[in-house]
Image (cartoon, rainbow over all chains, first blue to last red; front, side):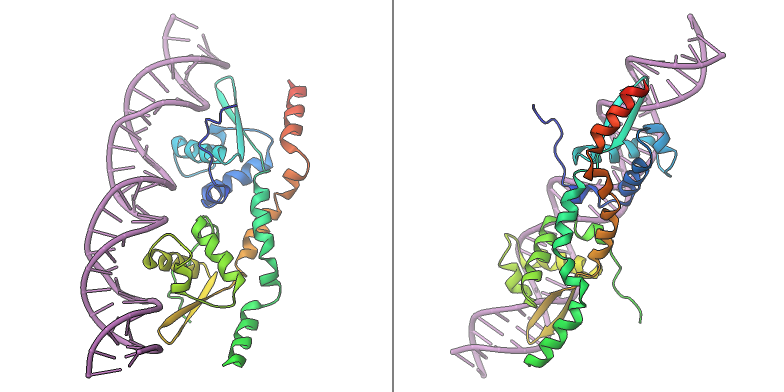
Length: 109
Length: 109
DNA sequence: ATTATAAGACACCAAATGGTGTCGTGTCAA
DNA sequence: TTGACACGACACCATTTGGTGTCTTATAAT
């Protein structure tokens, strides 16, 4: 069970807009070959492939060879970590905390 | 009302673990001066200050000068964008979609 | 008045990032 | 069997990133 994948931070993986768009595309179809994904972007196959590698390292996509194609699929499970993280801060924006804190501070002075 | 801040992508801002820890620290106290934040990290003041600048550009923190200190505070509101984004993918991990898709595919072949 | 503290503004640097182009190979089609 | 296609593996490059150190200035403390 050796890993082989250098294991990426999921936060890091979703930081790039191209990778978020890849995730979006992969969520729309069960399985998509590289060349088909590439045609959706203004960049070469190599670049798209690199982004997919990063997503793979974060566990967000898996791939398999079918004939001469490499087909990619989404595995959204690691995104749970993002939701867990962000949900903690929800209480800080539901009320307008910034305004609240400012008022509290003006009083204390 | 000109911006002045180059406006950062929130996804980009939270990609760095140091910045996430800063957000964590700022969520625990209403307002913290730079030197106090710096003491929590294994890096110089300049580095921490740079991270805070990035968070500021993303709108996640605000700062104000008090005496010789610069005090920082959290503004979690922009994190809503993260939650909105990730919540869309929740349906993909609630069921074990990966396994499900694999099964569907084995059938179709 | 002198000294210590807090922090902004730089200049600097190594490593990572996000792209490119090319070459070689396996696979499908004519 | 010949050619086109899909892709991995590189080598390469400019820019960004994430850190450093130094200098200067404003403020606070003694």
